Length: 581
DNA sequence: ATAGGGTTAG
Image (cartoon, rainbow, N blue to C red; front, side, top):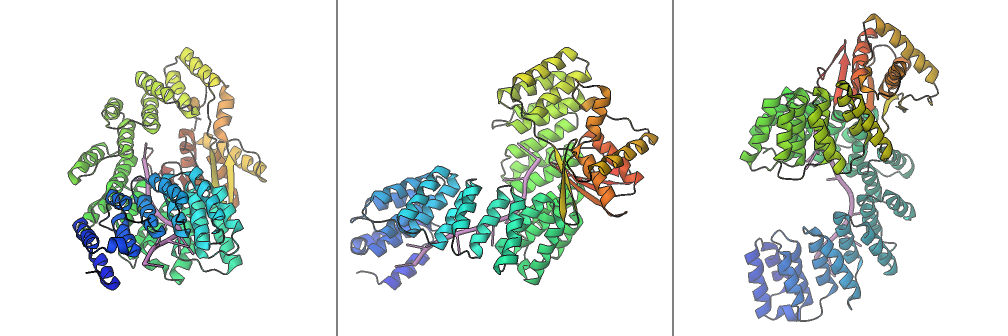
């Protein structure tokens, strides 16, 4: 007997395991419904392809044995299921088959196929489907356009995403959200925030949870805490703080802007249930600030709160140990991952190698790299090389450098480190050889920059920068600083500068590092006693670290510097990193 | 009978 549709729907809902699906399949087969009703067939396919009990290979077999030509719905079930499967590229080829089939692709087919492109990072295919969307006459579909925009952003083609956005004749909040989030995730946070401002000022649309997430992520990257706090005010006004993901983003924003205590305040007082990500974000925030004990305490507490740590939690805890030089604790944590059934990934290895290397255990770090079950990446060898520089290990430095060359790394920093190791041993011929190799290769130098915010305006500096409107005053301040430092017995640490320039030039090269310019600018343009926040894209250099410590005493200022890896909080001549970084 | 936007990571 054929099942009535409402009865079929009930059955479909109750299918929670694969054996249920098979039972239903055989029932539809014996009752003849699979043949007589395309709807029933499509529904069964959908169940096989996308439900919790899904089995995509069963779905494809079922599809191929369909008695009559599959309906568009049947195709869609497959494309959707494949788009969510481990190999989303298969969805794209099924979509191509659909385009050649007598049944036409509809807007949904396109949407699912585009999702697959996003997951597979297939930008060429996304373009292809885009043109098909237009040809099929779905060019004005707001939902499809939003998907399209989102896909372009996710495959890294932000300019295309922007173009789709600009061409939309009607934009609702989701379209804005897609672009704001896309820009934030694509490391273009300034544009994301511009768009967020425009949305509020021009369009009269109300930002929702998703909007503020994109904007907060942009603030985290920029270290823009004033903007971040304004967004937090809006969140509280609109009661968006009932959403745990929003709370996580706020915690992250405070953490990345240098306020671990404020982050913890949000963590403690949030009105919704904490998720795994909440704990991980807070642990990482403490780690970033070098507050090991707080990070490890939270790591312990999360279990008591019934939240099992995952690989990201462990990474946060390892990172905390790394920033504090807790070697034994770090190694112990790393080893204990297996007890929880967690498999360390390259980042866990990276963290431990760095931890061992910084502590001077260069051999052990090397052993760790050699014993890794996956291919060590550039970052790992760079950590080892950095350790070799600190501890003057020439042989190991050569090993690491050779690996880096083999891997095609031609970043300036790698050469400079090796050259410094040789220089420390006064092996000038080798130094010259490295310099020669740098000239012969097309060495990439990442320009260092720092910036600081004053009255809502971001002031950015590069090394030796003279483009700022107030550069004369800034350099005058640095001269004053230089003079005062002498009284404290300061001598420039010129050993970290390349060796083919004169001693005085070396001192000058150091003297005008971007972070010093930013700090000097902070000193002359903010009132006494207010903290100065600086963000830097690279790691802070030894000389700047010494100088800024002294500045914090001489001028009684708290100076907070976020470098590539962590925060340095300078106060009263000391730094929160305890000179270990 | 199925569509768009989302947090943590060396």
